[in-house]
Length: 567
Length: 54
Image (cartoon, rainbow over all chains, first blue to last red; front, side, top):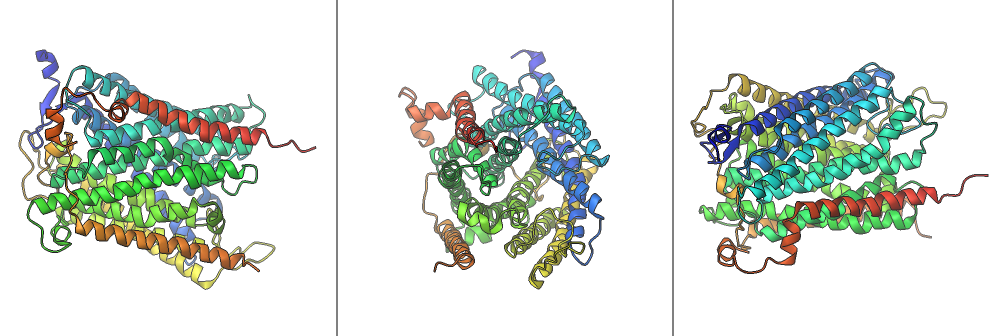
């Protein structure tokens, strides 16, 4: 390699990884931008929760729907996908010891994403694009709302192709041997799903934009729904793949954990690639225009294979942690490895909480909702946002927050400040999000509609009343939303303060003990399995999960039987 | 495959499944074409086959 090419690299003193400086810049800028959109979207989320809290009922109807639109776009798309770009560049250039292919195109992608996201936000804040995240036709937003989303998607697609090009460069320049590391394989999974997501978005949003400026006369609402959910739900499957990759990355960096079996974990990711996007169909389970065959194949057959992938990861991630801890000598009883895990390290704590909550809250409820018959119990109720706050917020957002505590020293070369606040942050956020998810699902089970400004129906001609328990749950949802917001503020304060005022690490390793200490490069940047299945603690945890899963599944069948009794 | 077995077996043919998993562009093709056919095309054909109201 030439001297000028070498000048573009530094060697990370903590991990020994070769860091391509243009890639590092792109990781930094995408991560920082992501956090800004999280702050904006989180603020709108708080306003939504305070309005749906019956005793507070903060916003008037028009501003409520505006805030709901802004909340959905900023957190479900902009925060997550900017951060995923950082993950893709990290998992390709850094983990493969490679240069990033065409950093200039990476910047083009970044600027397009930023312009698109700002444009969509402007359209929403102007008040004439209050169409919510789904923007179902025939509701019509301002043209620059659709244009903003299209420009954002084009930018993201460029970023994804820079990632694929980097894989080719790394292979050609022999920067790694054999197969890519598992974390990179998880990122490939996310990138594949991203391509399908963005193509689906282009197929439907470009004609919708043309419709908004009058060049097309009609968009069929059901075709719109089918294709839009190819984007809308698949975009959340990018998150699942990315945050599972982040779980493996944190376990490897903090504990040196290797996957139990590389083959099994890769096959689980392959299940995602083949089947996860098909779960988009569960949004259309109540549509009379779609056949039983299409609904049942895409949800109750194909989706279960993707769920199998998630359950494999649910076994192998804690299993790899247990194997690593037992190797260090934590072998007493079934759970010494877990008791003596680094719970004061926000990266580990956030990752493990994300894993547990994604499985118990988002995972189980997702399977229940994806069952056609059971879906009727909660379709378009608050149960749906309860479910996806369990997946996207408790699962993805918390995992991304957790990995930030490693990225700040590794990429920004700054030590963390406000360590106590950092240590508390994942717990505070997790408690808040657990409450949000559970109470919204509870209210939804009692029939409370989603996306509704006034659950008392005070101006309705025909009165409708929910049980008192539903009002209690919406109040508790508001309380826990405040807690989650505090957790979010803690995260932003710690990250911003660390990047601006944290001790500069330069060529030194992070001081130890620090909350995010001692990254271990070998496990994250190489191929290799732990090679043990003597994991009694993980076996017990997985059994508890299965019992909860089966019980909850059949409780819902019981509810359904009570709704439509057999005579 | 363990690390040791992997390095020792460098001359062995790479298993079919591993060749698929090691090729991101095959994965990209599968990950786009399967949902495009089973979800998008099948779904749009379902909508297109709904009789038009008289």
